[in-house]
Image (cartoon, rainbow, N blue to C red; front, top):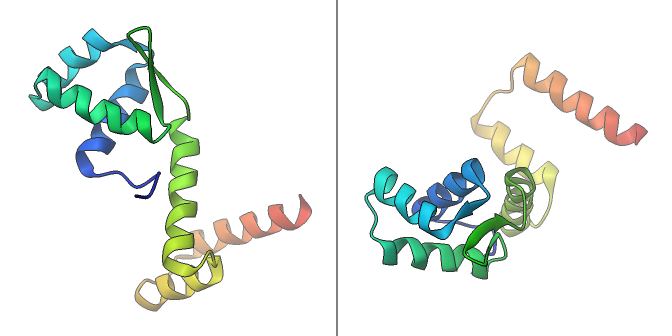
Length: 120
């Protein structure tokens, strides 16, 4: 099981928590019933999975994130890159550009990232 790979429903729940945290367990159950039409047990089952992965914690009936959405997305990208391309960013870019053309804006942004990395 990959720590940062989430199913569609898990990602939806994570996004809902990030948008509303901190929130009580009761509020989360009410939000999930309203937004997803989930039962209380479904909400708690999904929350348990996210807590086991170290993304959130349910402390004293209040849900808090252990990792920000931005940090999670960074870790998710790193996990994908490692799993799919052996951690090689050049291999990923080569595979991506075989099917997709980079715009001049994309090229400029990538060059800026490379230049910043060289300097830093």
